Image (cartoon, one colour):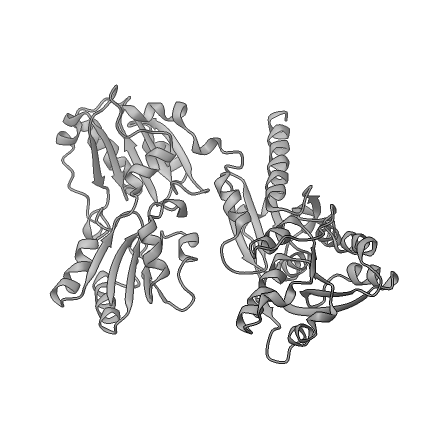
Length: 503
């Protein structure tokens, strides 16, 4: 039993601390705020109870007293409880209040500090909050008071410090803040900035002066979470801005997925600055119950000379079954392994096994044609793949007279539901597809959408063919790898930017 107040940081999941990650992954119960990113929430164990206690301005579905009681109740039930808070728990996070009831009742607790947006927002906007040539002090102020009252800020004292001023939770009070600074003697030309959705792919940065900032905020409809920075160092933002220079910054890409968990493609795209929306199109169901086709095939494993995989999912399902069924992997010592695509080959390699054949082209037909040239007379092939897999592979093998067993070891089923994309998501719309079935389920799940306006970035020609059948504009990666897909997306967006620049 333990309660951990964990700072989730400003938004970028990469800024979550190692200790914070460990506490989340071992939690029985998690209470989280509204500014905690989806990527961090995805780290919570499936078995954990997850409670949304997020608050909006003027709307507290779970009041602070209720949050305090929940922490106490769950801890008393013997659970490891994580209170997941944006930024740092003790920096305007009311962490101290949440510990009071726990301390009174003798409940063990700990505080895991988090990266504060007071520092991170400035850093991701290219603003060093301290600089020996400009300022030697930093002052962090809350722009939001209790019960929505006007914050009581001593502007005269702040202005006299000649330091960098950072206001958190102050977007609605930006006009009062700037007027207060000017009234206290600050120059109207003092550089000032505001950073919205800091450290995320939705980040927007606006730089002006303490006089013009309120107008800039109003004209650009800046909303929370936003951090206000006032001081000479704001003038360095243009020179030191690194985040907005990422190649896919400002680009919105939908990644259509077929399994939950951490997406390597999404991670790579976010690292390059893209705003990524993940749509889980389908779930993977292993077909490995007692008496399954795979069980029967493995009982006769000595009859096979080749084992064929067509996806990394199939590799995972196959070897997971060996572990669950307590089958000694040495029973495969005589088997040669073939697969499609380098991602599948890498997955096999994680088991300490080198593949014997992987075609240069990433499709079932190429795999089959290659196998036809190297399979010896009398050899039998075990194909372990998805139910209703592409017919190209088996068709070529059949025509060549090669003996095989096509064993379905998993199936893809849709999650259900429909999606209605907003105008912001719709134009322009790029969707990344890593398999043909994700295209089909995506298309079936969309409401009122013109598929001809979708740029579909596909991992192979078969996937691209499915996208074209729905009228999408399809682009194919050079290789069937995540790296190749990312490169293709980068090329598409570079061309779009050049077209915009050239009119």
